[in-house]
Image (tube, rainbow, N blue to C red; front, side):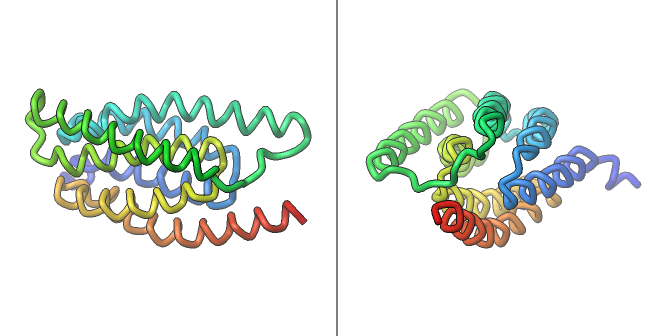
Length: 193
């Protein structure tokens, strides 16, 4: 019983995370609503575990959740979904640079101003997630590649930080992200026919 009490927030956000990724897999606009609740609870969880970059990132996720929901709904109101598409190559190069810069900045802040014992990994997953959620909101197919990398590193990090349910969820996310890529690729091909 103590285990469940100690890990209730981990378990709850994990259940919401599973619902979120399944809705993302289906390209359902409702993933944004589930994500909003999950991220709100994630703020508390990550703060408690000393994952300060992840905690701060949840605020960015909340803003992007609202943005993504509005962007996807705007297209639904026009009687068509926001199309799944490829990220323009120029945009990809820009976002690689932005991601590296964000990683360096977050690492600097974590290593100088917090007691984080995982500043490199925490900064890395946060920086890459910033790029990933933006690409998801724009419905770029390549967002799945970003999430595969984020999910692998995050799974290892969360096991290390004693967040076992979320760690297991992120391991499952890797598999779902691979399948999600192929599902979205097929959806993209059929929508252009």
